[in-house]
Image (cartoon, rainbow, N blue to C red; front, side, top):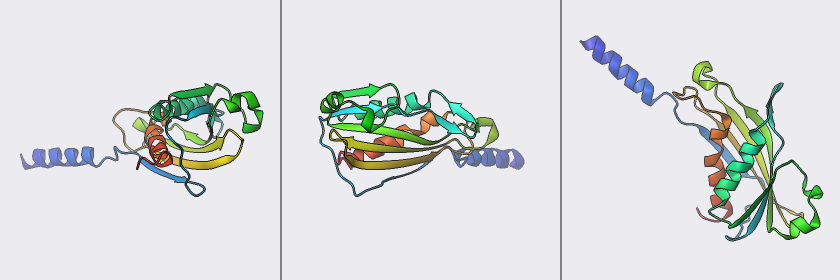
Length: 175
């Protein structure tokens, strides 16, 4: 009986301490500046992420979508360019319609099937934020790592929401 209780306690402790939480690091690259609510924002869809020779074709869309979803609470006007472009390639007419332009860049996107491999998913994304004069206002770098042990298999896009939400809270002075 003691063995059964010990095993149950061990299983419970393992479940609770199994690394079910992801870890994040994020930081503004330049001194923090802030935006006002109700600004119009343009999001450029980044190029797909890669890990070694594997390309994740929907990763750019997932980043742009997660950013747009989180920006909804700050701005009534959000538009997305569905293809990767640089700030120089956005027309002056399009620039004048928006106050800020977010151009994400996927630096690392690693889907490691954590559920069975116990190797964490990882992301690293840089968000360059420009004003409508093509001036870089700020850059924000997020890195994320999933738990080593997960009970439900996830993908790297599940690591996006929290650090993006934190970035926007800082940028809109909501902390």
